[in-house]
Length: 371
Image (cartoon, rainbow, N blue to C red; front, side, top):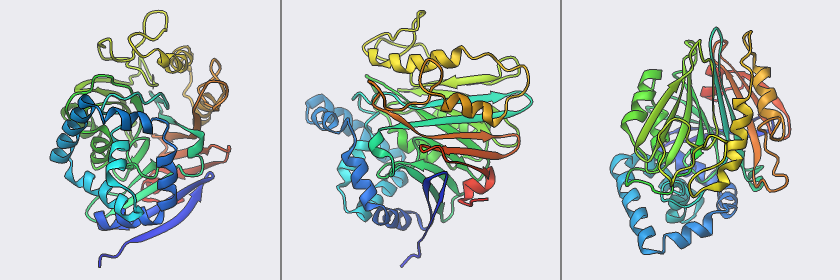
């Protein structure tokens, strides 16, 4: 029997699992180890019933089948990980698969998360991970040391492929991911599985090229940085179309929330009009526009910013002063974690939902080490 090791630790109030071993055995053991968390997260998904109803319709079944077929054809290993996770947790694989494809079949998935990047003399990538308050206590860090693969640490929602939030790998690549709603997906692989495979890229150019050449059914915005060189870029990949914008000395500050900024946009995708209002069928994206307005209005620092500058913006609440979310009023989400990666100094600053903070060397973080 293949040996699998699971080590527990914590940082900034977040649970942190470090899992090593053969791929499928490791995910099976992870599922068993986090069974209660997986069940709780799956039961708390607000879009769960909408997904089930949609996929009982003729069009919904057809779309789901086409996306599953494309994913199985191009990402069999990543699907096998998810199946092993479900087996270990003793939960229905089809239900978990549907949850992982929720942004790839056209069902509304709300908004959440904010990314920033800076590249001039110093370089940073920063990410706010926003989720439902019910996920507090289940959301965690997960380091995977899979046999034959480079180590990677991801922010993880149990029951999902560990790929849809913030990631750092042993090659020095760091990125945050923002959801982009797509009402008219294409028949292509699911975005979670593309993002999971991306974790084995070893260069900045390779990561950008990978996203250019691997279209997804739904939409993600990746804010990618490279430790050491400090290069960074935002990649919008939306239903088969891709746009890349890099931070430069002339325009060192980049940001992204949950609406399309760089791609020409058809009416069934959220974008911004000249007055900042949402266009098309998705008026709820006014919340994403509001966060974007805060970031658009920032003055570019004359001197180089530090990690505290990003922490202040991402931890200030609420709009119109900052982008930190508190699940107050009509907002259904809260900021579960704020992460600032100092690419120049190779340090990672992390702030949990309770305000606890920690600083870790970036290479150590990717390997699952506390210092």
